[in-house]
Amino acid sequence: MKPIIQVALDLLETDRAISIGQEALEGGADWIEAGTPLIKSEGMDAIRSLREAFSGNIIVADMKIADTGSMEVEMAAKAGADIIVILGSADDSTVLEAVRAAKKYGSRIMADLISVNEPVTRSKELEELGVDIINVHAGIDQQMTGQDSLSIMKKVVREVNIQVAVAGGLDADSCAVAVQEGADIVVVGGNIVRSADVTASSKAIREAVDSPSVRAYSKKSIDEEIRSILGSVSTPNISDAMHRKGAMQDIFPMLAGKRMIGKAVTVQTFKGDWAKAVEAIDEAGPGDVIVIYNGSRHVAPWGGLATQSCLNKGIAGVVIDGAVRDIDDIRTLDLPVFATCHVPNAGEPKGFGEINAEIVCGNQTVKPGDYIVGDDNGVVVIPKEHAYEIARRAKEVEKTEQRLFEEIRRGATLSEVMKLKKWEKH
Ligand SMILES: O=C([C@H](O)CO)[C@H](O)[C@H](O)COP(=O)(O)O
Image: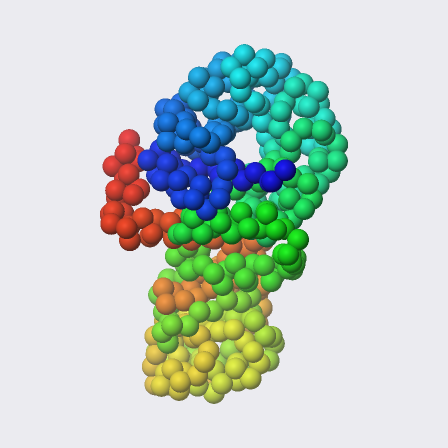
């Protein structure tokens, strides 16, 4: 049987959900899911509206039922849902009540294994309890910390005889792997609904699940993955992902149009003393960013010769809380340089300070190995221990903005698209 694509409409407003759902169906999606955020935002009316708009399609209500199984299934079924989602971790009494109610109203039950400790054992129990579909799911917050659902899904498909769905940040490549490993249903949210071209994204997933064998899936190292994700987002996306933290203050690009991503080699120096700053070039390697605290706007610990030296070593860029000089040379060289200002005079190479100690640069703490990203907006520092999660969250921000941009391009204003008045704090 052809694999089923369930598009998860994780939006806050029904009107946007309907138009995005229509575009997803044009690309080849099969089932329409009223996402949990949509149901929480607009209630059963969201399901009613989707039922009306998509009369020929299966409607899944992602209720994530935790209790009162019968009552909540009845609500969703009467609103028009064909499949209703309960939490796999719900008590057996709730699951049984949900299953009984679903039978009464001619609906099916999908059990979501999000945060279930023993997913394989629980899947077998859920099958026994009468659930129709198991959904092996890494939740959106879990995905941001690197959890994925495919490895568990592979085990679950071998143990149960009911349909198995898989969800959790799936894209065309991972959908292809999922169906090759036996998934009957792929549930895709963000990678369809937050893309600028929903139809094209949905089509790419359709092609991937229909011809999965032609795709190669290569696993990157964590550092490669972090760098690759950070390479596709902006410093504003990262700042949003960090809840408006991480941006260096009073540090500006010295040349326009340069993007910089790398791991910090830190330098603490004092007012114009350029010895440690320049020695750090020899300590740093390809892909590193030298981050210097110098503390003077009037004497520079950095200039054109140091910049050229970095290029010889494949260093990714330089950030200076302080001044640079030789700005005319720096502008002709291909190295991203960020600093407080530029001045004519250098200091002296006295040798005070330290390389690779924790420093404060642009009013942000920077540890050796933290990820530093710079672009025309400025520089952000990402603590290394949270780099993967922040990169993933920044990517989600970027996807959301792409979709908003597209809707605004079609003629709406930002406040209209975001329903700003409705979502003001009361
Ligand atoms: O169920 C979901 C999540 O818990 C939010 O309610 C998502 O619909 C599901 O994870 C699919 O979305 P993506 O992970 O963005 O593909």
